Image (cartoon, rainbow, N blue to C red; front, side, top):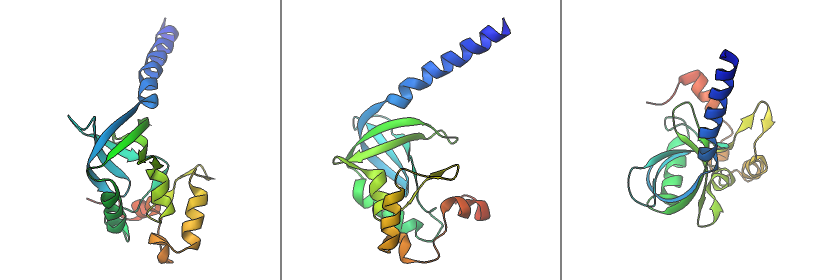
Amino acid sequence: MRRWLLRFSLLALLAAAFPLQAATFRGVVSRVTDGDTLWVRPGGHGEAVEIRLVDVDAPETCQAFGPQATRALTARVLHQTVVVRTRGVDEYQRTLAQVRHRGYDLNAWLVREGHAWSSTFHGRRGPYAKLEDEARQAHLGLWASSSAVEPRQFRRSHGRCL
């Protein structure tokens, strides 16, 4: 009986999570928290959803180049219509998503312009690694400094910004 209940619970959890992972919606950006987090009002109305851009990691707001990354994202999308394709929820209950603005992958744009790193997964380079390499070679954005510190390392040393 216990095994059956565990399997049923797992299936129910997976069924509930599947629609969230497959959801795509259009909305208006109402706020930008930092270089990889924004708030989108689905349909331009109602309560905004906190979106964490997936596969990228921008500098923390209290970290070198963090304010510039936030300003760049704000200038690009604040009060603009975007298309959000959700991919799950993170430990802070933010919706993980890939966002398109005017038909272009916003996550890729952040990396290509030197505003964020392409995330790595268990030592594997992320989907935007080639764009990161190009931004590094061109010394764009945060790559203008030779002392850029990955946000993950920054958080380990200094904690999250308050």
